Image (tube, rainbow, N blue to C red; front, top):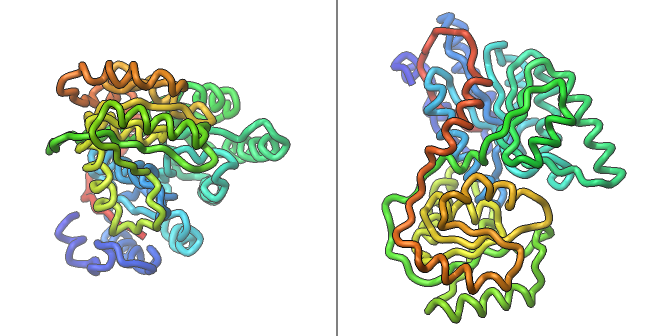
Amino acid sequence: MSQALEKILPLSFRNYVSNIPVYQYYKGYLSYRNAYKDKTKAIYVVGSPEHDNLGDHAITYAQMNFLRKAFPDYTLIEIVANRLMHNMKCLEEFCSPEDIFVLQGGGNFGIEYFREEEVRRKIISDFPNNKIIVFPQTIYFGDTELGRAEFKKTQDLYGSHKDLTLVAREKTSYEIMKAGFRNNAVLLTPDIVMSLDITDPPKERHGALLCIRADKESIFSEQDKKIIQDYTSKHYSTTTFTDTCILRPVSLEDRDHELNTLWNQFKEAEVVITDRLHGMIFAAITSTPCIALGNYNYKVVGSYEWIKHLGYVKFTNDVKQIPALLEELKTIQSPRYNNEFSVQHYNQIIEAMSNSSAEEPASSIVTA
């Protein structure tokens, strides 16, 4: 942030304060921008969570980290999903044509988590002249009457926007998006969390960590889960249980603490067995040996394609293969994550978001 911005902006603008809308922060920023004819541009990161899924929080964390590095000349303004409508007055009044909207990545492109789809629709319909990019997503509307009807609504709305880019995080979603959104640019990259490397500082490892979901996306019965636990008990002295959903809301202030607490659990495990997509990705980015299991759609197996070269992450849908995979993982000495494979893919996002301006004004980060 420039010294001029530091002087004019109140502390509440520069630091997150619960329940105060971005409008109260942004008035000061826009007053500066308008009064001094500053060329500072904004990236609105819209749709970040406050719910209990740390996988989604890791996506926002990675998005902010990625954007901060890739676009130092922009001010980053984060708007959580459940406060979007509270902040629409600010956005409609002060958003400039040079500002960019980044819509939250994840696995909510469809009807399973429809509030997030409504957030995207609101931004895309209300800001037809701004560049908008949907960060890496899995699309899944389902082959039902409701799914087909809502997919058609999404196609029509998205296709009418003149500068909307969609990013898929695995090949199945990419193929669906390419076929269904012919008027929009469609890219294929890994989940944005794969841009992180959380290996250091390393921890002493002991025991197995099970991160098995208990919601509608699981394909494993309670008997299957008991079998998995029995396998780990035979191979490791201790078995610990965790989940990427922690059954309590996570505020923006607590995001980093909660993520690091969970990442440390992964870093302290000799092996992780998980059917969570971000359980698999957290194992990868913490250099933790892992057996990944499938879920009801293609997001886990599709995302596994990006990291199967690592060697210390294995995928199976057959729990009977777990003992052999555990033995195989024990032979791997000191695995180490390297995210360089993802850079060339993420460069597509940078290119899609870039414009011809040569100005490089100060950057800052704001949350709302």
